[in-house]
Amino acid sequence: MTPRILIPLDESATAQHTIDAVIANKDLLPREVFLLHVVDVHLVQRLIPDIQKNMTYEAAEKSGKRILEKLAKPFRDAGFEPKLLLELGTPGAAILKVVEDQDIQLVIMGRHPGSGGFRDIMYGSVTNQVIRTVKCPTLLF
Image 1 (tube, rainbow, N blue to C red):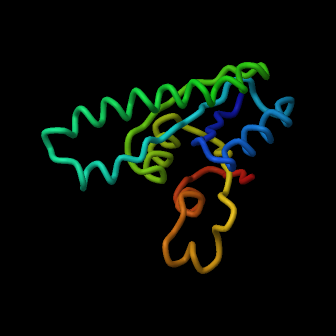
Image 2: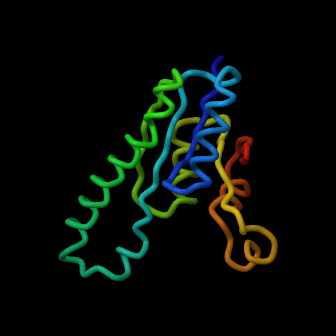
């Protein structure tokens, strides 16, 4: 059985490092991987008047699709067959939802430099939230 692998990505240097590491190890991974980009809309929910929220969400979704296509290109070029997933919400909750909905067996993600330790205890991080809540292994780069 081929494992179902989720790779959450954004446009950060950490995500680029993760992309490079996955592609460098492509012979160890299945061709089909799930790429997830989350458009964090929690500020929209608080700062945008209700009348403008739909327009804002539509623009965020359109932008998110462009970003996801850009992030998928190096995977396609390396011979992967990425399944593209776009979520609007908060990253940690969206990743957990996708893991459960798609029956993911492994999450591969990056950890932003400078995070960890006391800062994560006080404020949390997406990576910490994911490794504490998902019910599958998580590989960190």
